[in-house]
Image (cartoon, rainbow, N blue to C red; front, top):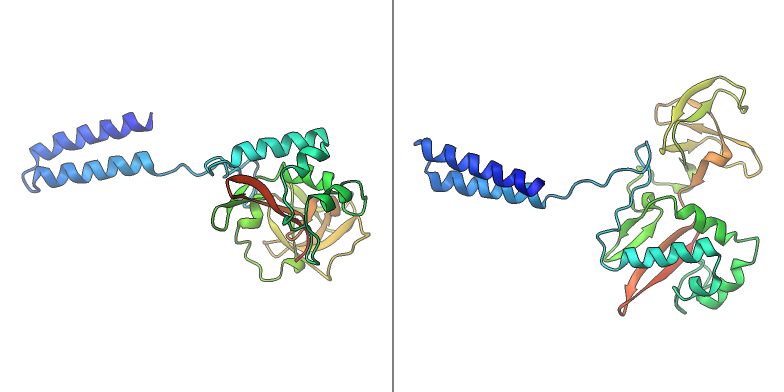
Length: 240
């Protein structure tokens, strides 16, 4: 449809060029052709999967080999198939910032409740995908975006649509505003055992958001790349 529209525009402009003596027809036709090519080749922005500035998007469909890799990853996670997941790694797959790496270690951690890796992978599957660095991809999508903060440990991502910002740390409290997939600042730092975190919204309003609706910017992310012709997980890490 876009190609037909571009061609129609080209024909119309060519006809106009023939009647306009103020500019040589060849120049006007050339301009029309350039405009038509631009209309066809300019990519349509990927639609967000939800409402909000940093709502998940899937921008990896155009990355060669990525869709097939992601399909294998999702199938392994849904089936809780450790063998299939480990098959997508290598001995160099980074698992932490202390030297932990490789498929064998990943297999061990899959059953260790301290790491909650299956749950993290479930979560990542719903958070979109973005091209990353030279030719790789990263989940979640927002990890590849400029979130406008220099300290990722002092902010959190609101992971949902129309999440209420309460005046007090209670779901029965007055709702100051609703926030959809956006960054909020932590007031007084993260309170690990609290049901609500005190935050400052982009509007400047200060209130409380349920902890379950917040995610650290440096929580688990999965980075994958084509290594010697085989797509594999190059990093599955949390923290910084």
